[in-house]
Image (cartoon, rainbow, N blue to C red):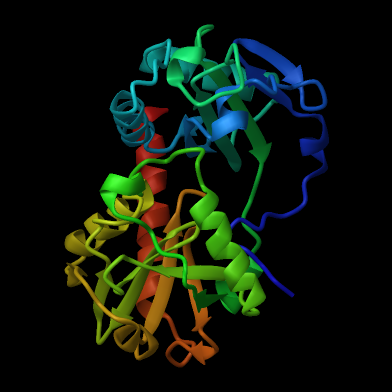
Length: 305
C-alpha cells in the first residue's frame, strides 16, 4: 500500500480545528477563500510548513528568512512583519488548544482578483493570509519500513523557468512527478536536475550515505530546506563528512543508506529506489543524525521557552 512522507497518525481533534483566514478564526468547514483568489486561479502565492514543539515554533527565524525573501522576490506584499506573523500563529494555536506535535501550513497569496486573468495588477484588495494547523505526528512505521522512490521523467527546472528555491503554491511539476511515481508503483518521486544528476524528491530533500560520507545535491535546483541545512550543520558538528555535490543514479543505487529531510518527517529513511533495495537495511548514520536532530530541536525549544 502506498505511503507518503507526510503520513500522520489519525487524530479526531482535527475534525474541529479553527483556521486563520485574514485575521478571523473559523471552523474548518467555514474557512473559505474566493474563487477569484490569485492562489486558486494561478497558484500565485508562497507558503511555509512549520512545527510546534512545547509551545515553540521550531526554527521560526529560518522559516521567516525564506518566506520573506521569497515574497520579496515576487513582489508579494505580506502586509505584516515577523512579529505579526508570530502573533497570528500563536493566536491560532491557542484557539485550537495546541501546544506540541502540531504541523502548520502558513499560506500567502496575492489576493482576490477583479477579473480571472493572470496580470498581478488585477489583485487589488491586498493579500490573502491563511494558517492551517493540525495535531500531527508522523507514523512510526515509516522509520522501520522506509519509503519507496521511483526516478521520474519530470525534473526540477532551471532558475529562469521557475526557481525551485521558491516555496510557491505553483507545485504542478511536483504533483506530476508524484503521479509518475505512483504509476511506477512507488510511494514518491525521485527527481533529477536539468543535467541528469540526482536532485530531490517531489516533497523533500534527498541524501545518501556512501562509506560513511553523507552526500546531497548542490542545492542549485532544489528547495533549500531548513531541515536540509540543519542536517548539513549536524554533520559538520559531529565530524561526519558531508558533500554538496553532483552525483548520479549509479552512486545512489550503490549507497549504504538514503534518507529524506523535511519539516514534517525530519529524517525519513528510504528503503528502495526503482525497485532496488538501498543498503542492507541497517541505517546507523541516518539513526545518528535523527537522534542529533531531535536533540537540536529540544535544545532550541528550551532556549526559547
